[in-house]
Image 1 (cartoon, one colour):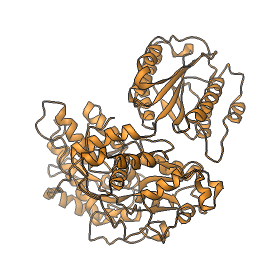
Image 2 (cartoon, rainbow, N blue to C red):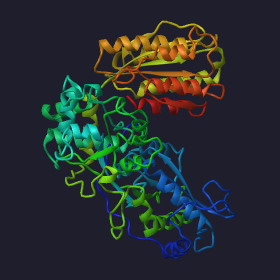
Image 3 (cartoon, rainbow, N blue to C red):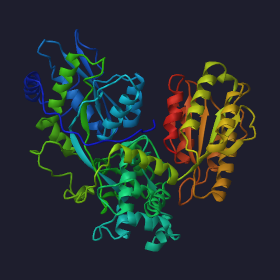
Image 4 (cartoon, helix red, strand yellow):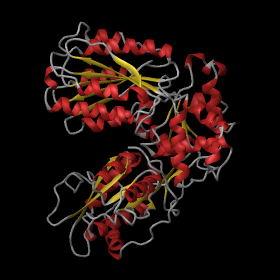
Amino acid sequence: MRVRGAWPRSPCRATVLFAAAVALAACQSRGGGSAPPAPGQASPGAPLPAGAVQVLVAYGSEKKTWLEEQVAAFNASAPNLPSGAPVVVKGKAMGSGEAVEEILAGRLKPAVFSPASAVYVSILNDRWLAQGGHTSALAAAGDPVVLSPLVVALWKPMATALGWPKKRLGWSDVIKASRDPQGWARQGRPEWGRFKLGHTHPEFSSSGLLAVLAETYAGAGKTRGLGGKDLASPKTRDFVKAIEAAIVHYGKSTGFFADKMLARGPSYLSAAVLYENLIIESYAATGRRDDLPLVAIYPREGTFWADHPYCILADAAYVTPAQKQGAEMFLAFLKARPAQTRALALGFRPADPSVAVGPPIDDAHGVDPKQPETLVEVPGMPVLTKLLETWREVKKASEVTLVFDKSGSMSGQPLREAKTGARAFLDDLAPRDSASIVFFDNNLYPPVGPLTIAEGRGELQQRLDGVIAGGGTALYDAVAQSFAAGRARVKAEPRRIHALVVMTDGRDEHSKLTLDGLKAQLPRGEEGAPVKIFTIGYGAAAQAGPLQMIAEAGDGSYNQGSLETIVQLYRDIASFF
């Protein structure tokens, strides 16, 4: 998805039906808002009761643990509308940008939209009105259900090396560390390599958009009143460009960076822009690094709150009055004390001010309950639109190779859909990015490219359109050859993100290399993998195990695709660049 604008702050919804209060009392008497139901009780996946009203809630994945528990508890309480109809809530965790795209396309029809930030509520409404034929906003102003500030997550030893906690760190410290040719050697830790940063793609994710906005404010030396002159200022642009130069890659999901950061350690990322609750969650995560905990840095130049609004799509034609009533009942349930207390236990700041902030929001979990001290103002839609235009001009460019399986098993619709997905991927790359295509079957064919997207998109898409399926599968050889070529390009273009996107629909049967032989040719240094590898297993015959191992060796991710999802998968992977 490409963001068209951003958000003005909105007043909170204040009204809840009397029926919601009655149902809430019944829920609380059964222990609602705390733990999931016991076996045998109602759950989101259970068959709907006769005459039930289903309420679909599309929500930001950052609050998945809490929302899943509350959905299960609410459903287990057997709530009913005043009419007597049972209410069943179904939750769907997804990226905010993905949800907006799906809602506007009519493929997703939730009664409630609850992104991490109100930014995406206004983006949804802005794009809805821009479609034509609509005279009122789609999403009503929403109540925050939980809160969490945007922070920079740093490994504690690295934060200490930069002067934390005695020194308040900020974006200027990120620039200083990332620009230093000595890297972490400047702090006496040469084994840590260079400073590496991650944040999500601002056109797909609210945390990425807020990160770029915070960087821009810091570069302009302001906390409010950001305008077009600030965005055009060479000083501001150079500041943002310097921070973006430290990016390892972008991404669609804030949770992805948190999970991978914990799993892969400092060789993957020195720091990532996350939400405070994800820092706290990391202390309970399976496989967490006790010797290397994460701590939250609240940039001294200023940051934002993620307010997690709960927005009922009351003006959507498909939302019935009964679904609206059910949605308001669930909102009351989420704002009640049991659910808010549970949110606190999971690392969120409660939206209910009567629930006092306490552990685990404390220094024992890497966070500071007294922060953030400095908040910055959200500008209007025109400034945010210009912000994204500026970011596209200064962001870290990418060089990506599509490694494309054209074996005989791809004939027919599988090949047509894969071509459509690859074309969509190229469409989502920026003009300054460059791309290559390597076709393979049981043979490897000369690469097409690298070509800049600005000049070569048409040629790349033409070559995709003309490919014909045939032959067997030499996956491992194709990955090894493409990785070697990409590694050579790292030396020629060191300031780009270098990556492979590998798609195959079957098992390797024709490579000279074995899987172990391939892994030996995917070297990792103190900087991690020099070329990131993202793999797609297309269809039921694709072997997940080898593709997962290849992606892990390349500091990327494995994705399972099908005829129905391959196009979206390619577009999702484009968010990393």
